[in-house]
Length: 279
Image (tube, rainbow, N blue to C red; front, side, top):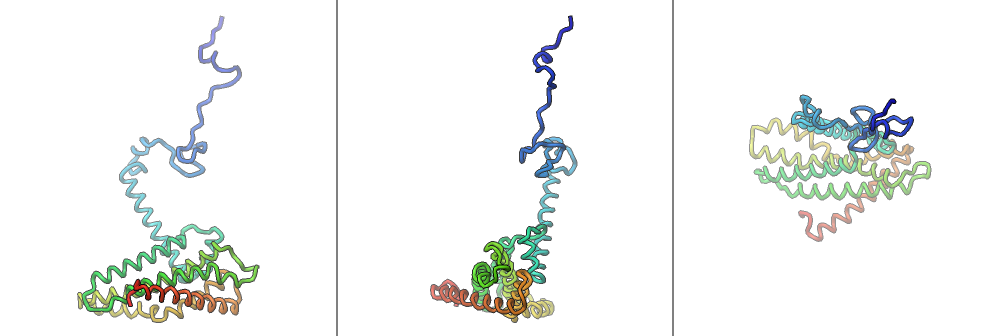
């Protein structure tokens, strides 16, 4: 008489035993290979990956990952800054419509530029040995913080109120455009502590004078014409991002500039009155 094994007897009739389905340790989705199709996490056990030269779980792998991260971030920053300068309207529209690959978010970009501005100012103070009046650096920093904030708020909430219904965007989208415009302003104002830093270096090392003269000549031009450059940039930004007519873009550029200036002056004089800004 034919007998069945204990395992076969315990198995329900007509049903084959199946191995439990492997799942991604990161997102929990079913795995159909070594890499998760949903989150692209390498789901192989850590030990096999460590045995591979330069694999993810090796020292060399960590070094490679760090280098890729820095390179990717640096490339994204430069690409975004370039577009902030030459095509701000298309940059804002791409962010609005989800085409964000290779772009730095406006909040991160503005925060990074303002932090860099502060770093340039601190470095200029540290190397100053030429008797330059460095109160202008502190004033520039505070002016930049205030005007960037003022422009972002006005473009986010005031200027859009004057648009026809067909051109209106959400407050979030308007604020994105305002922050990218603020990034352009911060980029120009950053040249002020940079120029002062070059001047301080000249005071310490006279052999740098020929090179420094060329650098200063180039850097001082955007600073000198900063208000005009900002208005022209704002006009191009509004016209391209919102699809305005020339007349509409001119009017809203002047409106945005005027309201931002009034908001800035109110905050500036308040800070001066409280002694928070170098006089």
